[in-house]
Length: 160
Image: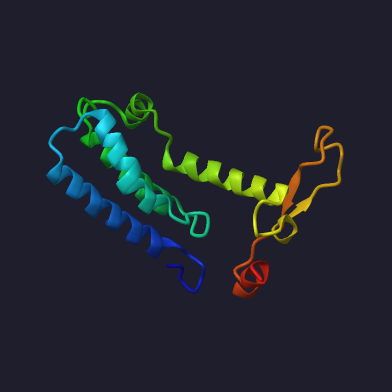
């Protein structure tokens, strides 16, 4: 759900509400909340809702990023022996990345696939290879991203 001005706040709110409903179901039905079980449930039932097609609706506003991060923040509190710890400590104990880090990693993977030709979206539609050899420290893989506009015709031209 992307609005006419290309903002994804509606999608973030929808994902948040859906993830909270699933978390409520897990809280009500699971009584043995050991980390291994809770991580499996989180990775199979909650996180797919948050990450599904997120490269298309990547949240840019701080309020949307915080709303999505609140999902994982609340879920990690449900795990046994995690209530008194800070969010960062809970992530470290459970060996999880923040959702922001996961989105950044997925973006890097997508750009790599475009660069190597494994994606249906050609690299030259979104990026320009930088020919300045001084700024690339001897390699030719530096990319320059063209300035983004809110013109929806530009976006539709990319995916043709």
